[in-house]
Image: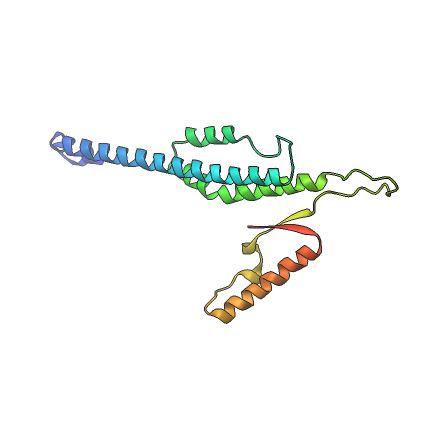
Length: 173
């Protein structure tokens, strides 16, 4: 629209500007469509993994995981490129939160008491901890060679082993 203010004969360039506008509009619609497809596919994969884990843990409670249809409706309603890119980047957080919810739910379940056992509740699963690599200053490093890699893996192994010794299920993020 700027050309209409600065050009003394904007009507001469109107056809060209209209073609440019239509090309940009088509490109943006294609980008939104592609982002929607990628985002939906990523969430479908994450949700399938969460459902599989839910079955492995023998959890039948339906309300632990978010409603997938509602999530898809939100993605399909969106026409904002930035919003779709953000949702796509949040898939790993969605999966991490879902895994934590499943393991926390399992941990809250109490095993039935057998005859002669004490009345102290025994929980089915282990406590869950989300371990975020980027929040640990010891793990923020540059790896230049195999020795650096081994040192990094040793540090990571030590930190995770300590959490396992404390009977925790670790979800890496």
